[in-house]
Figure 1 (cartoon, rainbow, N blue to C red):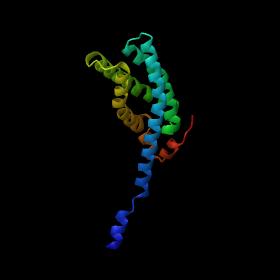
Figure 2: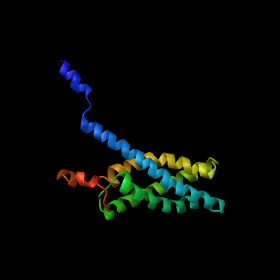
Figure 3: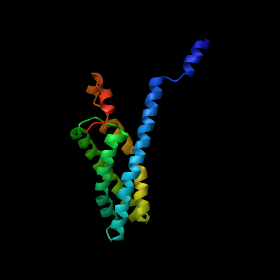
Figure 4: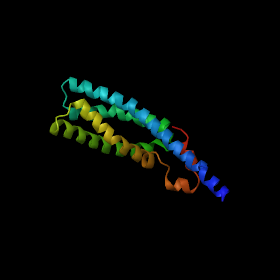
Length: 161
């Protein structure tokens, strides 16, 4: 009986390892997001100050932020070894969806609720971040099920170009 209680108290190293890996990836994803979106928000605010509509500024500022985020996420946050062709295509699909989603939020907040443009962009970013992380970790940079079935999943966590 004592041994059973002791076994239940000791965390499974595989579960603990996956939990630590997920936390590490999430932390790196957040750092990557701060860097990439800091760049995007700086460009956004510069465009708004130059007279661009917030929707146009949001759209245009997304591109340099997206390129920065893709490279940092692939090489550092998720340490994905998926070929660029596969990972980049998935990334582009998710990113286009997220740009449309964030631009819609900015527009609603600015046009309907009279929120200051930069605040609207930051709120949109906060709403989109968890959705984006889940899509990135479970689809964009995830190993294919076929790779896992033949034991290649470990290879997809090493960083390669």
